[in-house]
Length: 261
Length: 271
Image (cartoon, rainbow over all chains, first blue to last red; front, side, top):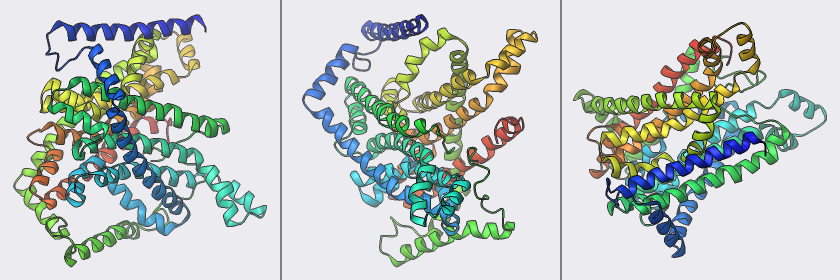
C-alpha cells in the first residue's frame, strides 16, 4: 500500500473510533435515558442474542422473501414490457403516458389503499415492492433497447440474422448495461420500499416491522441491532451481488451506462 | 430527459405528429384505464366504499379542495419537503465539496457516509421518532438526513471529476483560490451537483409521504391518506394520491428541468 492509502485508512479508522467513543460517552453520561440511547455493548449483545435465538434470522428471511418475490415480479413484468415498448410503437404510446403518471407517486403512498383492498400481510408488502421496483426496470430496459446502435442491427441483418437471433444476440446484449443498472436501481428501491411497507402494514415478522414494534416498547437496542442488519444486507447485495455482476459484464465490456430516472 | 440515449435512437414520441394528435395519443391510455375502472366500479364487484367510481373521487377532490382541507394538507407537506430539502442541500453541498477538495475531509467523512448511505432512510424513522418525539421535527430531520446522501455523493464525485487541466491552466493564468473555486470548480462540478440535488429531492419526496404516516403529524398528504384508511374513505385516499402524483410531476418538470436548461444544458455540458 502506498503511504497515501495508509494515511487515508488511518484517518478513516480514527474517525470511526472517535464517533464510537463520542456516542458511548453520551450514552453513558446519563443525559439521555439508557432506554433511548443504549451503549454500544448493549446493542452488540442484543444483536448477538437475537441472531443466536434465530429471531433476527427469521425477520431477515421474511423481509428477503418479500423483496425477492416483489422484485422478481417487477423484473418479470418490467423487462418484457420495456423491450416491447422499445420495439413496438403502439405499446410505447400506451404504456409511456401511464408510467409517467404513476412514477412520481411514491410507492409507500399506496400502502393504506392496498391495506384496504388486500388486508394486512404479505400481499400488500409484495405489491408495494413490485410497484417500487417496476418503473426503474421498465424505464432502463426501454432506454437500453432504444439505444442499441442501429448499425449493429443492420450489420446483423445483412449477415442473415433472423428476428430471433437479432433479439438474443444483438438487442439484449446491447441493452444489457441499462438492464443491469435497472436491476440495481430496482433492487435499491425494493429494499427501501419493503422496510417502509413492513412498518406500515407489517404483521409479525420482518426487519421493518421489528424496528417499528420495538419503538412501542422503547427497545432502542433492538432497533439499532435491526438497523445494523438492514444496512449489512443492503450493503452486501449492493456491493457484492450487483457489484460483481457489473464487473463481470458491462465493466469488462467497457459499456456502463444508465437511464436517468 | 434521457441524457445517455444515442442520437441514432428512434425519434422521440410525438415529433412526427401534430400537437392535437399527440395530446389525443397521450390521453388515450388514461381513457382506457378510466373506462375499465368505471366498469369495475359500477358492476359492483367490490363494495363502492373500497372501489369508488371516478366521479365519486372527483367529487371528493372538488369538495376537499373547496373547503380548503386538501390545499392545507398539500401546503404542509410542501413546507416540510422544502425545509428538509433545504437543510439537506446546504449541508450536503458543503460536505460534498469539502470532501472533493480536501483529502483530509474525504478521509474523515467517507467512512461515515459509506456506513450511513446503504441503510434505507425509513429504517431510521422509529429511532428519530423516539429521539425527537413525534411531529414536525422528526419528519423534517429525517427527510433532511435521507436526502443528504445522494447530494453529498454527487457533489464529491463532481468536484473530483473537474478536469485537472482546467485547474492547472486557470492557475497558470493567475487565478487565486477563490476565483479558481468560483469560476472553474463550481461550474465544472455543477452537472453533478444538480444531479445530486435532483436525486436528493426525489428521495426526500419518496420518503416524506411515508414519514408523515409514521410521525403522526396533524396535517400532510401522507397523513391524509393514512388517516382516511381508518374510516374506509377510499375516495379521500385516491384523491390524496392524485395530488401527490401532480406534485411529484411538477417537482420534476417545473423545478429541475428548467434549472438544468438554464445552466448546464446552455453551457453545453449536458444534452
